Each structure stands twice: as structure tokens, then as C-alpha cells.
Amino acid sequence: MAALNSRTLGRFGPAVSEIGLGCLGMSDFYGPADTAESIATIHAALDAGLTLLDSGDYYGMGRNELLLRDALYGRRRDQALVSIKFGALRDPAGAWLGFDARPAAVKNFLAHSLRRLGVSYIDIYRPGRLDPSVPIEETVGAIGEMVNAGYVRYIGLSEVGAATLRRAHATHPISDLQIEYSLISRGVEREILPAARELGVGITAYGVLSRGLLSGHWSDTRELAPNDIRRGMPRFQQGNVDRNLAMVETLRAIAESKGATVAQAAIAWVHSRGDDIVPLVGARTRARLAEALGALDITLTAEDLAEIERAIPPDGASGTRYDERQMRMLDSER
Ligand SMILES: NC(=O)c1ccc[n+]([C@@H]2O[C@H](COP(=O)([O-])OP(=O)(O)OC[C@H]3O[C@@H](n4cnc5c(N)ncnc54)[C@H](OP(=O)(O)O)[C@@H]3O)[C@@H](O)[C@H]2O)c1
Image (cartoon, rainbow, N blue to C red; front, side, top):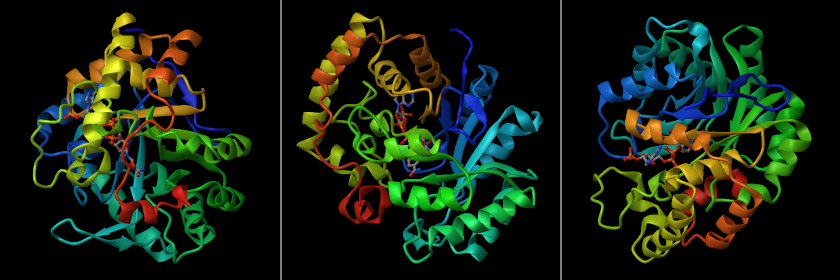
């Protein structure tokens, strides 16, 4: 595999590797994960030159940050850029209670994250969702104070729409917007991506494999753990999942003709959308990571892209990307 190139997150953000590692599935949401293998995967990523690690304080309610602390122990602090989301409120059983991005909450969440991570600053700090009861200027203003105090380097956002992005960016430069973007989640292309480009805000794209559905490794007979969030996700429901997997098979034929796997073609497609876009992959094992990094060796020609578009049309997915309740919470879907 060739060395990883870097991409700069917008006009105001840091240079990061052209692909990032999302650590969510190592502690939550996608069924059991192996801690030792998760740490080995983070080490393999860093050793391959991947520098962007994404997490959230509510992933495993602090466990994901503790995992990162262990994985980064003994490494140079500047070898990894740590991106942390905050704000989601959960009860002891993990149920969602709402969102809090008031200025005092921002500082409180940050203090806890710094302690858990065992670091003196977080590279990119972002609210995981827009708090509908707090003007974005107040949330971003509070993170800006933490930038000035040296606890945060850059401010990011997650799943906000173009209008919120503009307001936030007018308050403090935003490095990147984290948002779902994949062959079957292309809503961002309508208004949000053009606005981000106009403002000089980078995109960190998540769900590039649609949580495994677009990976080529999914099957409709897969047993899901009781707390696996995909149980409630429309695209994984019976009926929808069959239609979605039928599309994946057309992608498989194209990928194989290029000597690639389905996951590699799906990641390469997002990666090909522009130098201002950094795909985050949710690999939890070294094998999945190696496959994901292999995507960077693939060049998709204009012909390949057209063929992929025919196989998977922009609105081709069956089912929305989140359930109804969560779709209503997404500022990016308004
Ligand atoms: N801002 C937000 O609202 C938000 C929301 C969700 C995620 N994120 C961030 O984005 C990151 C990535 O998102 P995601 O985990 O939903 O996305 P994903 O990369 O679309 O899906 C990850 C799943 O795909 C499966 N997979 C199969 N082959 C793979 C391969 N070669 N490489 C990687 N995964 C493969 C993995 O399952 P197996 O391990 O079972 O194979 C994994 O659980 C998260 O870790 C998180 O940091 C942000």
C-alpha cells in the first residue's frame, strides 16, 4: 500500500490523513467488539500514517475515550488528531435523553473528556447534534473560549444544515462538518456541500459504508446483538435490506472488474468527491482496516464513476438513513 496523503480540513482546519478512523463501533452500537483488537487496529492505523481518530464522549458513555487513551499511551501527542463529539445525554442503561450544548455544558463535557483522554487539549471538538434550544452562536462561542484557553485546537460541527453552518462559521472559523455521505446518502450534495465549499469548511464523511450495509460483507441473515442500533435503522429492515443488498451486488460486479472489493469501491467513491472531503471508516479490526486503506490504491475513472452512478442512483436507497425520531432531530435534514 502506498503512503497516505494528507488533506486539509477546509481553509481553517488542520492537515489530516486522507482517510480517518471512526472509533464508535469499538465501544458501542454495532454489537460486541474486542478491546485488544480495537487497540491493535488503532495502532495499525497510526503506523500506516492515518492521523485522524474520531470519537464521542457518549460512545460507550466515556468508554470509547478511555479506549483511545489506552491506544495512544506512549505515543507522541501530535501523532494523532483526536476529534471528539459531545452533547448527547444518556441514562445508565444507554437510552437517549436529549442533547445539551449550553455554554456551561460545553465546558463541563470538555473537562471530563480531557481527563478521560489524559490529554491537555483536544484537536477538534464538536457538538454531535444541534441543540435546538441553544443558539449555535452560544455553543460555538463557548468552544471558541476553550480554543483561546488552549484546551481545543479546532471547532467542528456535526449534522447541521447550511444555515446553521453559516451562523456558526460567522462566530468562529469551523474546520469541518461531520456528516453522513455515501453512495446511498447523498442529501449533503444539495445545499450543505456547496455551502461548506463556499465558506471553506472541510467535510469529514461518516457512514461511507452505510454502517456495513455497503461493505459487501453484509447479509440479511446476519444476527444482530440486542443493542445493535442497526436493528432500528430503516435501511436494515426487512424488505428494504433486500433491495439495498441487490444494489450492492451491482456494485460488487463493478468493484471486481477493478480488482477491488465492494467496501473499497464505496470508500474510493466518497474519497473521489473532492480534496476537501475526508472519509471516516468504522473499521474495528486490522483486517477491515487493511481493506479500507486498500481503497486509496484505487483510481475511479470518469467511466467507472458513471457506471457506479447507474448501479446506485443518488436516490436509490430503500429507507431513510435514520429512523423517524432521529431524522426529526437532524438540522441537516430540515
Ligand atoms: N457525526 C455523527 O453523527 C456520526 C454518526 C455515526 C458515525 N460517526 C463517526 O463515523 C465513524 C464511521 O461511521 P460508521 O462506523 O457508521 O461507518 P461505516 O464505516 O459506514 O460502517 C462501519 C461498519 O462497517 C463494517 N465494515 C465492513 N467492512 C469494513 C471495512 N473494510 N472497513 C470498515 N468497516 C467495515 C464494520 O462492521 P464489522 O466490524 O462488523 O465488519 C463497521 O461496523 C464512526 O466510527 C464515528 O466516529 C459520526
